[in-house]
Structure formats: structure tokens, C-alpha cells
Amino acid sequence: MGRAYQNRKESMAKTADAKTKVYSKFAREIYVTAKSGGTDPSGNLALRGLLERAKKSQVPAHVIDKALDKAKGGGGEDFSVARYEGFGPGNCIVIVECLTDNANRTIADVRNCFTKTKSKMGTPGSVSHMFDHCAILAFPHGDEDAVLEALMMADVDVTDIENEDGQITVFTPHTDYAKARQALTDNFGELDFAMDEIQFLPQTHTAIAGDDIALFEKFTDMLNELDDVQNIYHNAEY
Image (cartoon, rainbow, N blue to C red):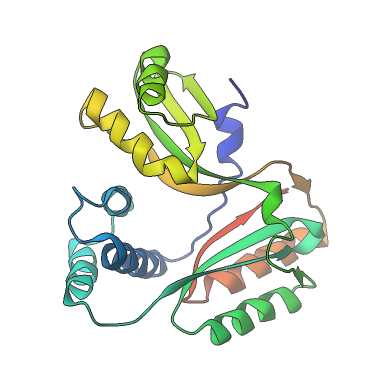
């Protein structure tokens, strides 16, 4: 029904460095997701999927519990989503997704990463139209038709579905994430999701070579050093 998942996942370019940085990013996202949608995973499917991903990434239980306890308290930081777009080394396209409690600080820090690597920060919408903003749910299952029928009966807009070596991968618009996840668990019980995320997937790819490779790696390293940066999406291919 579309491009192979194996090829696609090369472009699922969330980048991260040291484990402690990963833990910090998960903690902040868990706090924000729980504070906005409730701390009960059974009633907050976004939180449920996030907690499962955190555990698979070996985030310690005390990190998760601390973030949830903080969200239950009702006070604390007031984070908001900030998304920046632009052109990275070799003219690849980039989306930088942040959670920030100080938008002025965050945009200045992100702009500095662009400037110091000969990249160009764009205006909102300058490159995001070249990405698909979609939910991706991958899980072991042998019957693609049954999965597709269950999703269609739940009025989920399935943009793609793939079956590779007994693993089904479903792609839907990001707005259908909760509906798709609920339909799958309602029909097939508890599933062991290999992927349960909302991503920006590039529609095309840009090959980078030579000095641009080192510059691109410097660019992503600088972004990953920023506490506010959660995810980096790009279409660069070496």
C-alpha cells in the first residue's frame, strides 16, 4: 500500500545523545502529557503510549514516577510546544520540536544552532508542508485485512498499512492517533507495540556529502545539547 517501512524508518530521525538526556526528555514530555490530559494512562492514551515507550527506552521508574507526581501536584512549570523549521547543512529540511517554559530563550538558542552551522531558520510553515505529520503504530499481527477493517469500522483515516514479516505498521493522520490506538486495543486486546508515536516523516530526501556531513552532525549535536529540544526531524541522507 506504499513505501516500505524499512525505508521509512531511516527517516524517523529523532536524534538523541546520552541516556541522561533521553531520561530528561522523557520526564518533561511525561509531565506535560499528564498535566494536560490526566495522570491515569487508561484515560489518557497519549500518556499510555508515552509510558510504554519510556519503559522500552529503559527510563528508570523513579524518573517516570517523579514526572507523574509533579503533574498530579498541579503546579510547576508551564511548558508549551514550540516548533521551529528551516534548512540545515546541504539544504536539507529540518523541524525542531521543543517543550519550553521560555519561548524567547528557546528560539534564540535554536537560531544559534542554525547560524553557527551555516543553516537558515525559516518561518512557520516554510518546510513543514514537505513532511507528513502522522501517527505510526507497529505491532505483531498476521492479518492485515482484519486490522484494516477494525480501523475503518472505527472511522480511522488509514493513510497506509504495511505487513512485513508478521509485523503490521499503520499510518494515520496525527489527529487520529487516539482513535486508532483505541480501535486496535478494543479489537485485538493488549498489543506489544514496536512503535507507538507521532512523527514528522519527510516526503522526499536530500543527499548530503563531504563537509556538509560533519556540519550536519555538529548541527544536530548542538540542538541535542539544548534542554528544550525534544525531537529533531529531517530529510538528510548521507
